Figure 1: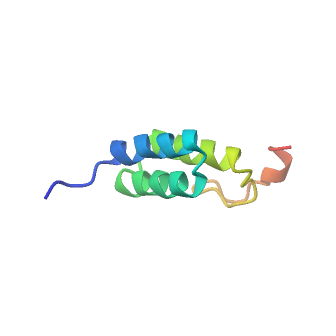
Figure 2: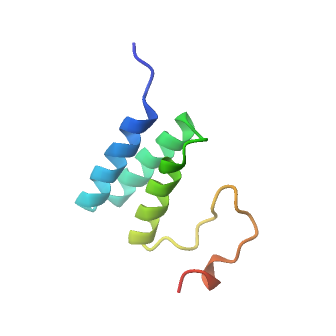
Figure 3: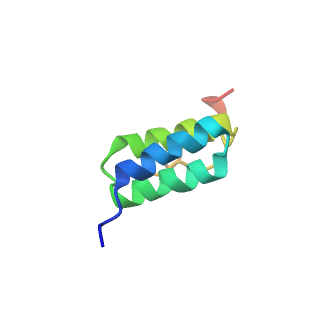
Length: 73
């Protein structure tokens, strides 16, 4: 069986985002990140869908201690 591909999950996250299926898009973006944490596009996909879904208050991995309420208005 083939190993899951981080780019496939990232691309599917983009498709879900276009369709407005934000929960599915976040799940796929997180799968992409889990498979390849050093690949920035997974984080970009997740951030984009969180912005569209107005999920500003969630903690951002790798950026602890930032007050996001002052960044996103």
